[in-house]
Image 1 (cartoon, rainbow, N blue to C red):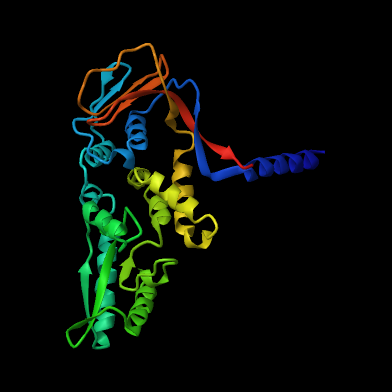
Image 2 (cartoon, rainbow, N blue to C red):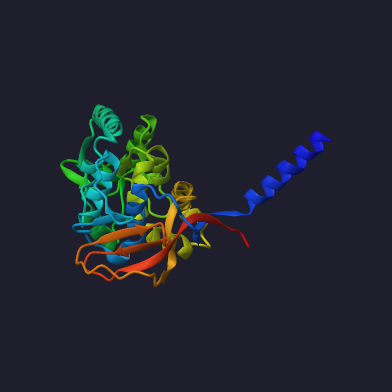
Length: 312
């Protein structure tokens, strides 16, 4: 009898889990009595996405009437990112990623030595890249990502030369790519849809980076609208956006169950603060959050928690 009950329980759990859409979350309104101080920064980021691409200058963060002062390292990193139009992510997260950037530097030196042993001329053209340059490349079509491993100092562009002439295309890049993979480096020539044979990086994809360093999900969350649009656009060619799919799933795993600002704006029993600065304020008694970007209009939203949608 116990075995039968166990089998039924397992089957029910499996059925419920199978109906969950890992790519889609919704903010379900509910009474939220406890809000972590970092939740306010996350709610601001999730509302102030690419639609308001600018710095949250003088961000005011208020919880139940008390203005918060952040002192922990993670929150300070988030604030540094929010309060700059193009934050220097390689600097903000340098301590977090110190071991990775150090090991990647060793890998790059090893790759250079291997290529040089063939008496080929090779140079690293660019490693760290700022966000402003990254988005310029995206707009020009020279990159397909808005947030790159270059921005974290975890990627490099490689140039091969023959008789001092830069080789834009050459079978040598494939040989170099195989050497890189032998060293545990990921090669851009393997990218699906947008191969980049002159590119190497420390991690397979952004999902792998976020899975190992969840603190970085805060940076990818800013571009969620973009990732979702890219995924929808390629709905009939999922093979081209497997990395995007993996990233959205990884981000959702970290968001599920967390406090959120629900979609529709509301009119609570409170007056909007007359301030020019960016602001996020939570009132757990009345169950609302007020979010105002810098030099933009502020709105109230009901508090809730992120939950997976079920598949149709």
